[in-house]
Length: 193
Image (cartoon, rainbow, N blue to C red; front, top):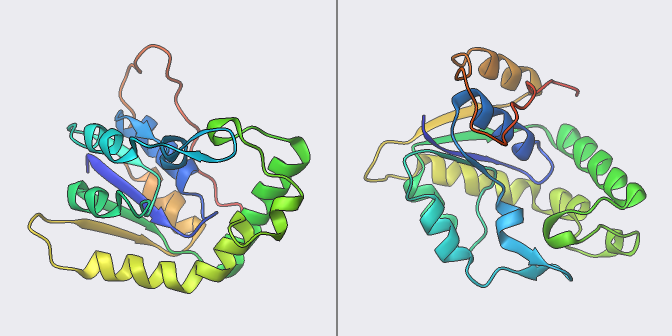
């Protein structure tokens, strides 16, 4: 488990778990949305494919994404492990609504310095609407990819509840003794739902 893709619906907790796995296993974490959205106005990174190819060429990484369309096949081909957060729609929606409300109300800057606005809640690509409308499609896509034949083995860790995720995380080996300078050890994920 050195090249890890944390997959699941929008708002499931992929980034939180991916950061925690990175700290526990001592391998680099890369946030897909931060790689993909690099400028104001939700400007997309024109070198995303090259950037992801370079990052995933290394011996170890954790990425929090099913994969943006342009790099999805690359990520899935290079991963040796997929941790699938396959939570109920109720858990996902509670989480994404809480996250988006906090981002909007507190004007939190996210990828490329952008913020979620009140107006964005009424667009089809807002995280809450996206999580609701794409829930079943995303689950089917992840299941198909997990079951697809591939040249190299793929370990799939299929987690259906936040409690199962915490149990999985708690069973992982202890974190490395020393973290590289400038990195902090993330907290253990907690089942809040």
